[in-house]
Image 1 (cartoon, helix red, strand yellow):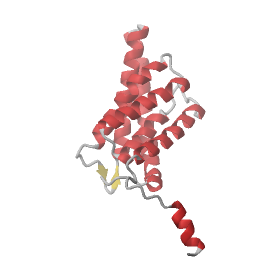
Image 2 (tube, one colour):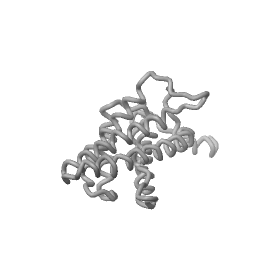
Image 3 (spheres, helix red, strand yellow):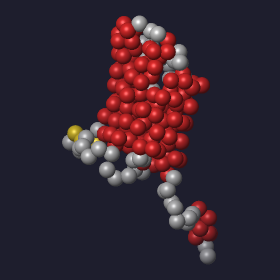
Image 4 (cartoon, one colour):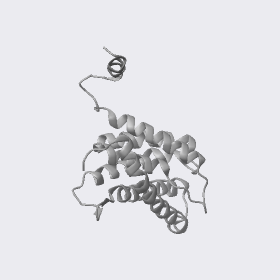
Length: 188
């Protein structure tokens, strides 16, 4: 047996369950990247991309997890968000992030063709809609708990959510294809 064969045997794993929990590894890595980016990205005009939503949308698009798994991803994202949140009520992430992740999973499993020419737009569309779902859940909780005026909710908070959704659409679309090359992805 030559050295090359010995090295190959050392890195080959045969458990019969390859890839069974691949979605966990992909999601964990992407959420870690998202958390770091969220910490270091400065606000521009009071708005920052929600890197964690962008990353879980990429993970869900790549792995095509079911709704229950997506809810788990959302809960983990909510927990990660609490210590790094810049929001007035960070615990609202426990509700808003699972909503966004579940919406993303439901959209990923629709049979709609979301292509423009040969480009798959599903990552951008799922990120935009998921960001809106998560953001509106978050600001609604914030409005109710802090008894904020309707004008603040409508004219101060909603536009921020919509702008963040637009930013997340671009980020997710741009990062999806390199992530797919790196991690592979389930066929659509």
